[in-house]
Image (tube, rainbow, N blue to C red; front, side):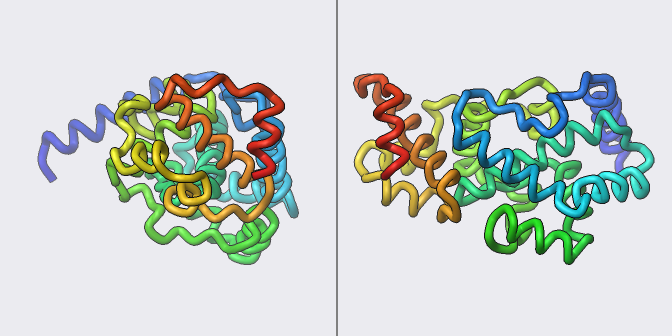
Length: 238
């Protein structure tokens, strides 16, 4: 192992200590940190929290992490769990939603180790087993990352601590993949959902996906009229 690599690792750990361990807890207990006020998003967050709290599952994951990783304190753990919960929701929404952080992946590994509880959680929240598969932090697809960043920054409050965990967000709306922008401009919502988003397992997820598609279309085509609450209601019934 080279001296340069060792120094880089030390520098990254120091930065981590400065950014995360000294930061205030991110949000009130159980909150995801939604950026916009939307009923379906809050319902999905509530469903996720209920699934995690069943049989004290979330608490036992946290206890196992603290026991096996004494370097992690409670404040850091609260940040990691916020990102883990956001990942789980993005995994329901997007066709590809990698974990972009080894530290967040650590939480997922601990969650999976409680095998029976993990299966119950998945069924309660997603209606199916959520497999790690290719959605590990090692996946770095630039097109998937651009879509991920845009969806993430639209849905969630994004602070310096979040960006530190996930890597800096550098893709504004105009850097979305060309194929994705072409589909948005020339294809129907059903086709876009099938190609770029996950197969919705519940009404809340379906509604949020429709919301995202319309949001992207408006951002890419400012000539589309502003959408009022009545129109959003019609979108949700699609």
